[in-house]
Image (cartoon, rainbow, N blue to C red; front, side, top):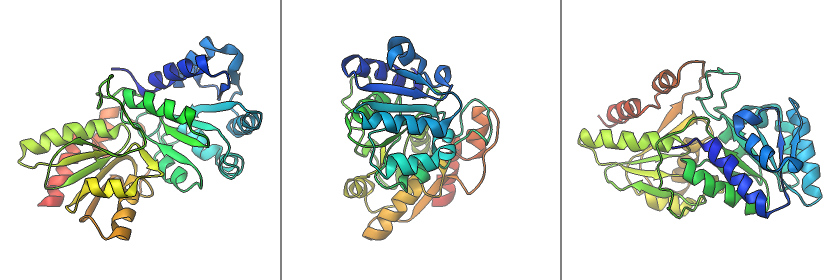
Length: 307
């Protein structure tokens, strides 16, 4: 079991070995994001900008106009907040071929607290015209998503978690990071998750089965553009629970609710995530419990909702 950031760094090194156009523009966090793996393997294509995220985006945009395929590497919060104007003006509005690797996303970033925790990134990037948004479940899907993003012509935001999670997929699985997929078959209700929260939801499904429920688990790796008809087919007509390590506003819960409301299909929706609240510093287990994202707390919310 390895962390997503390791899988991203290792995969990008492999891609750059056969594609000389791939470069990495870093914001003084390479040892944390694992962009240092790229720097060691391809030092001539690693650009260290320092703590100047807005400038990073400008440099990457300029490189893209010369035919390079630049990757921005920093903490997610710095790329989606501090450099937001540059991402909007230079990358999104021009459809520049720039990939945004947002590491240390969500709650679990090593107890840095709310200044560094990015729980709004999916909402921001979903609203960005022309931006593709990917949130892989584990190390294996991260490798597939990185390869897909490297081949895609246009801007991509790739959400990367700091800590390793129990794998959802196998190393030999053929993965399509563009399509929602059923992780666990079931009936009665459907749990929909994204990113590394899907790994915790696998455990939640097991606990719910011990309590007599038979839920289905659906994973959504690509939040934009989303295959709406396919997702609606997978959730069916019964109750739906969305779970995300993100605000319930603008992320996966909003996405599913929009699809259900516009189509007239599906049942009632319960959104589990941060409920219009800032996060805080603390141990990972404490934070997951407090914000209702640990397997045990997800089970409690579902049972309370169903009672």
